[in-house]
Length: 470
Ligand SMILES: Cc1ncc(COP(=O)(O)O)c(C=O)c1O
Image (tube, rainbow, N blue to C red; front, side, top):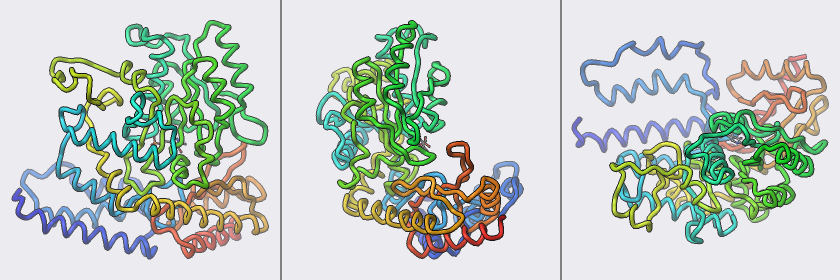
């Protein structure tokens, strides 16, 4: 391909995206596509072309074949799951990153990629008012960009196993004595990570009645009983901002329980951790001084495109001693000097893209004040929706925290019927789930185009479906 043609093609792609974003902002597109399973497969040839095709043609096909069958996560009517909000700054950074095409597995393979990542992780730690020992500047800990909260909890569990086994784990693998603890409200990535780490299903610690959060006294009893039975409590995973209801485990009480027993404490703050950008919401950080690791998905609520999770560790050695490898082909003087950070030892894959650039662009292009404004805006809209739910006969507010509103109708049948109607409506996406054994609908505000009109439109749709779904 002739690279002279690239600027015009890039401009065309940028123009198409700008038009797409305008259509999303104006809610001119559906949130959910209408095609049956197989629609896109049918539209695509079964084999790759033998001869080169024009990129303009491929761009055309993207909008003709692919875009109409996407769920538009940036749409103001997208209230599903937790948001994955994006921004022009993030998109531009991903474009530049792709163009530079570097691979920063070690300092030596792209020094600026590593040092930029160290710097932006420290920036973000300070912007979130995390304990200073989570910064690279402090010396012992530091942050690293992972692809996901799932990877973050997995590497945290590996570090915890390494620490709990005093390094035996590297040689002997995961012995059956090790245990991980969380509640039944933890995200599904926690049991998945425990299984992959060879620990098996986590021990489910009871929740405090009426709170959906971990009972610290029950945790202490269980850790002690397990220890007395010859087991090794390797890690406790707590959540700040659970997926179901955005509840927060009480870390100020759980932290000392873990610390006194030498058990690793990982905090999964994938969604809610971002709220700490706002000083008035820093309750989400309470007890973090006890945490061994803490993870926040910038790709959820920080206008940074997926994937971009930041994992901070208080002591990097537990992680790097567990993950390090030393083949001859990765040897280099900088690594041997011990003066540089090699992020290959902080993650599962060897290779890594330069994800720090998008966080750098986002933090600079929005400024912390810009990101705070977006968070407060989303919280205001969620509060508006929660009030509408509360004031509506036949509706019940199950939970409301930050940008999340969880609701149900009078009866489980009515809630299920409403969820079924909503599933057939392409203009609004809420996530059906089960809370306290009852069906609910979750609405999470976080689209970059979310506004009052969009929330009122969504609510009108929900009410209209509730009227007919009896
Ligand atoms: C609390 C929590 N933890 C973890 C995850 C998983 O995040 P990821 O997709 O980055 O692995 C989610 C996803 O919504 C979540 O809500």
